[in-house]
Image (cartoon, rainbow, N blue to C red; front, side):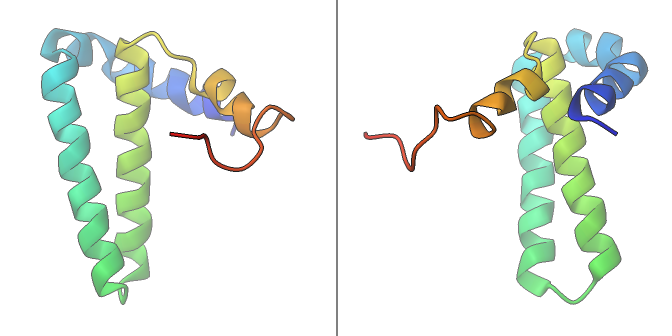
Length: 90
């Protein structure tokens, strides 16, 4: 499955609800999932849980992208082109 396909799947299932919730509250859900991933990484002994938390973080990232009108596959293109060389200067 391509990134765009997954993002579209998330949009079909959840976009109306996610848009009604809005970006600030959706971002809080995303951060909660990042916290759960952090916990799974820290314990590191439950592979199924670790995979589930990675999937949840990616799904909520897609949700945020959808309600912000961002195509993640296109955005990730910066990492597959010659444009990125190391880290950005601060």
